Image (tube, rainbow, N blue to C red):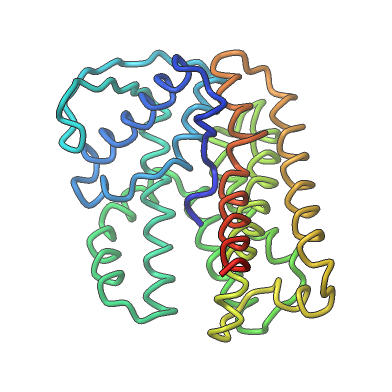
Length: 280
């Protein structure tokens, strides 16, 4: 599920790149402080988007830190940390925990099972703090497993599971912004599922793994690529509409970069791989 909500650095100003990186570093710092090195390795850019989104909306006060990063020791780095960083770090652990469990069930990967076991205590602590969000993730995993067992081919139905789950995570508080944030997360979640299924469709066909896009690929023939692009574009259009309804001024340029351009960087990368494959 991770790896699709990216920024397009080529289209971002140097100042906005610095700000975005500072939130990313802040998430890294908080994961290490709250969950140790095992938490730090779970770091991803998807939750950085959530931090920037919620920070832009709620405008909490940032703590600014200067630190030396072991991966980049030549110069000091800057980290922005606020109360939303804590929330995003917790959600990062929740999603990673279930992803590890899912990998263990699907692939019998003992390393993944061991890592999940290391996170179990932290997960239970987070579950007590955020029962609404963790319940949504657990329901998502249960429902997705049922769809996989019955080989559900309705892609909109299956993608909607990811949308419902991510909607609850994006809705940090049950306040006046709950409904809109949930809508934004819903369409973002559907987009992520579609992109993930699209990226894996050839691999899943080869290994006879579940993927609801396989039926569409079989039925639509030459129209498959166009239909996939249209579905994903539709999801991001709705996601962008929801974002534009929110009164966000702070970091708006960064967020628009991600929503209108950054989320498509993986798609463009997939297309380049396909073109290279055809040439060879």
